Image (cartoon, rainbow, N blue to C red; front, side, top):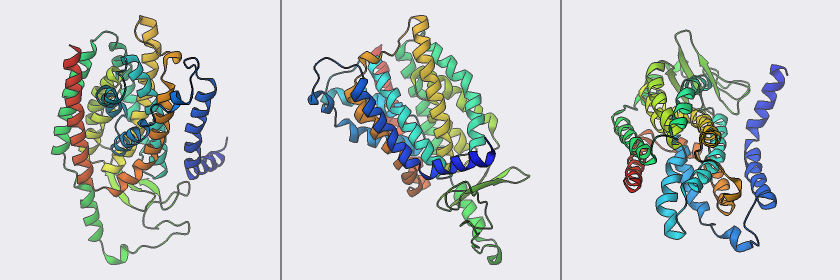
Length: 368
């Protein structure tokens, strides 16, 4: 396939991605209703029993996708602490299944949306995923040996550290770029519209929607323009620091299903990657490592006598509401991220990490 044909397909997919994203949960729900193994003689009461999970997972998916962390970081504590107040406690295997199925759809939806908005650094994401792979696999295999309470306790400590580091991280570099741009001579700061709708003084890519594009100069300075026309300047320096955070996060991703996004976002912000680009890029890393961890958990567990996923015992009446909720939340997230200020995002993420850490400590204490 020629590069021109591939570019046309890519542009068409991004232009109509809302349609494809809408079709995915509809196809999933249709398949579940038609062929999913369910208890015998189920009626409408079975399928609508957990309708209230839709608004809960919609809110959770919007939150986690706005800041680029794993959905399980919110879904698992919710199913452990909140769900039993309205229904019955769930077995650990059921928690894993509901979390994995919901997170897979939500992350995919949000990742595509952030790509469409021009907020994903693909070169950076590929390097981060490649570096995290062996640690994710190792962590997933260790999950069959290390006791579950120890998983939760260690991850809680990591999240508390991440929350502290986030509040200590200076995020004002985006404002510095705006200030420096304003100080440029007026003649060079005039917005000259390019023929394809972009601004001639900034990078513009015909394969992207709106005035979006990216360019890298000989000094490694990256200039990125998103779909709304906002520009971001940064470098990809700091690979070693990011590798350290993503390796530790990768181990936790394999152990407990989340961690690489929570710790990874800190390293990107600390290496001066603009917050919205960091969030968008982190979506690709979290999505791919979550899929990898899931595969190792499913097949690795069966090989060594650990847990495995059984379709027959899946609570289909739950996932038919959680899947469309996470898909919708993934689409909303880029707009929420673009509307919020940097300080608001920083405060929100740091507070969310602390809350999740407390919940994890409670999980660990309860499992000892």
